[in-house]
Image (cartoon, rainbow, N blue to C red):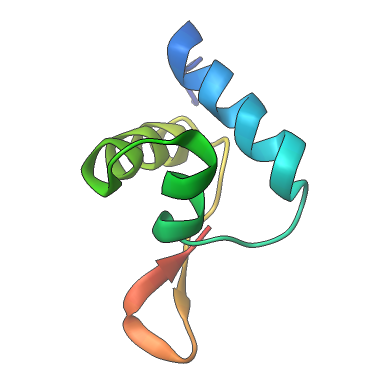
Length: 68
């Protein structure tokens, strides 16, 4: 069963959705959009993933990186 993310996380998701829509993005893209450091964005994306609001996959060009 998925949880409902905290309000501040939903606001960040709204900012991402407004710019990226359904396009894939990585942490660097999200950090630029959200104007946050990579570590903060990683926490936001992790919480959204745990709640079932976003999916994660490996970047086919670099398996050390993730695409959301």
